[in-house]
Image 1 (tube, rainbow over the protein chains, first blue to last red):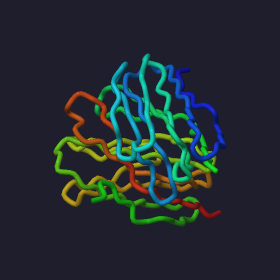
Image 2: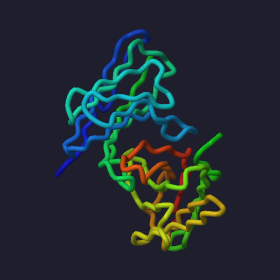
Image 3: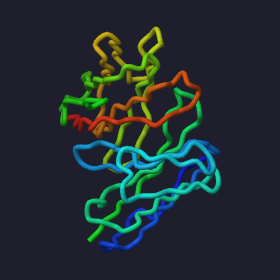
Length: 113
Length: 118
């Protein structure tokens, strides 16, 4: 079965370190998204991509970057981790139709100390 | 301004009863879609139901139905015959520009925590 996999599931890092969260999907979807989930805010969009070599900033993109070198992967990098980036991070993908739901990974819980 | 508003941070319902979770949205785009997701305590995001702005009938999926009132810009989720397993966080989300041919990002509300009581 097709799936979307995030790794690691849990990560603890120190302020100022660079961190990369992996996202790999086998749906063969062109569209991929990164969200963060914080209490009281729901899910907020960080970055998204509509295809290889395409990346776009979302609502809360400061301090984050992504790259899309193939269809399957959209890694999220925190350039210099800050305590405000402690959160649960979700990767998602979708088909290109307007009524297509997002398929989510199981999330990565990141703690920045 | 908030694009998606869920005004009920928490809701309680008795098992086997129906419950309505509120969602209002704000958009000037005539072509949009509304999605509901369930997030149990295990954390995964589960897609429940979709309603397009041009759909003539309210969407239904098993025990889930969408009370779509376009003029009021509301898309409330109705869960019939609640079960203990329905206890979870529920998110409403919107996608604008659905007739453009591309699946743009979803904008999410802050969620409603539903607890089903035995």
